[in-house]
Image (cartoon, rainbow, N blue to C red; front, side):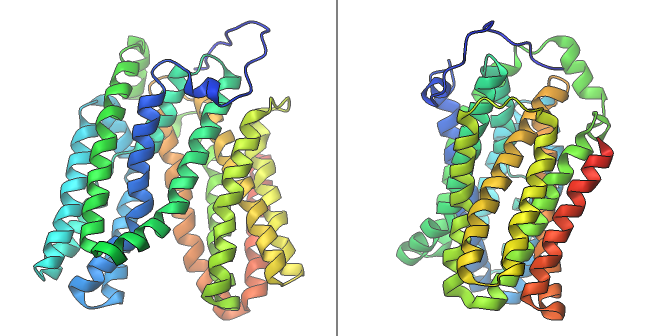
Length: 394
């Protein structure tokens, strides 16, 4: 169900200030950013807390992987739950905060089995902050052009939170310890989720009854083209994760730390630049084109295997990745029935998260068998193949 264009032929404002000036936009956006900062921060404190509790990086990594798997696979189910029961958002946030706090307490008390169990439980209930916020932008923005700017600003803010998160987490762990940092993450998600839940409930009150009925009876993968929309996100995530592993194997952690920082920087810059311009080309082909552009980016270091070339690759690939996600969110808003936007957006996130996990695994194997350079070439070929597949699915 697509939103009608409003505003006639008036050219929409190009400033992101217009997005933040939308009625009832600033408070939920700030709340969502606060909760997303928790997601950016939590990875390192969770791993270190579990390591301190179990005495083993291997066991801690397995528990953290189980946590991440629950976050990825159950994202659409959590989004569907909060659409049907709006109070479930705060309930999920509360359960998530309690579980994270429990991991910190169990680690301090030297109860490793309890800490591992609570970490796995926490992965089952993080509130779907990103999908809910993007669905809310779909209700707040009066036309497609302003929605593009809103989604671009939202994606840039999310990328910034995930880029700054590990740095802030490292500083917080050094100052207070990993368990305290984990409790701080719990406080952030609680503080951000309540105002976002209120805003989402207020917006949902305006959804027509037939939209809500449709949302409750149609299967998410049955929505037209949704599976095809997730393929570019999956391919881009597989490629970047695989290339990251290859680069780590080739040049070590110091060089890689600088190189990998360029990916979110490119994403923020590319997303903001994309949002400011009114694009005339068809929206449907943009994720496919950007997947192909990502493949071309990763072909560069395979041809010229130098850190400087890899740096330019990560900067450009980050821009392609974020713009592709923004365009996919636009397509979700245009093609998915009213009331199902949060769930559909969660499927996009799930595809990206699963692609990231699969890319790390494949990248490690390929780097060991083929070497770093050929591993990067294989990831570029995979992204290119997925771009071709989406052409056939069109």
